[in-house]
Image (cartoon, rainbow, N blue to C red; front, side, top):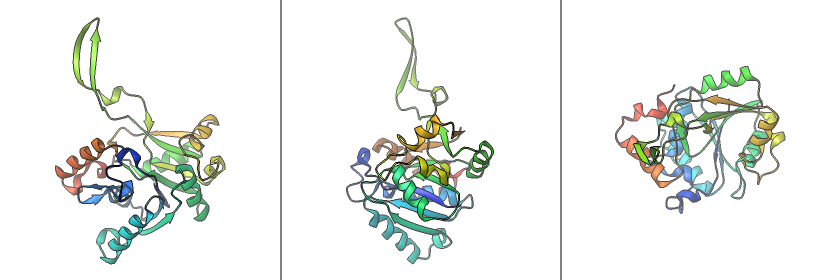
Length: 244
């Protein structure tokens, strides 16, 4: 099954890191976050990828080619196509462009800026059983701010929010049928305000609830948190590579 990685955005919320490279090439430790995302799938037996690039797509393509030229173990058995989907395109358009050019009826997809220890095979089985057009991985948002419990005028507790108290959000890590392209209105349409709401309205968008590790890289703070995890953890024991 093909894995489509949506990796073409400008990365404006982390612009300090994306002047010279696209967001998926921002390093977490010794490797770009794109490497970490690829590994999530590779260790679960998936080796066929399409990277939907756009902004500074040549940086991604050059990195892939350089890694292949070194004959490194991690990449030698992978099929990776870097597809330039245009700098102005949005996530929905990028996804449709890729699906329209590759064979198959079902595709895995994710964003190029987040990691999670999602069990992809369980996600696939869930999707097949629920028979939706698309399934997204629903996650709890990370606790970003200090939380206070107030009784009357008195604070009874101050500290990090409990992540399990939060609602569910889109964590990426999709599986979609080819029919999702019917819900995408052109290259300039974001998936998040186009196809996904349309599918939800028609009852064809399913949610696979993931209770394990999930972390985006939206901001420098996010990047620093991920970097600290890498620095303090053996590469083979990273939480997003401990599949649950």
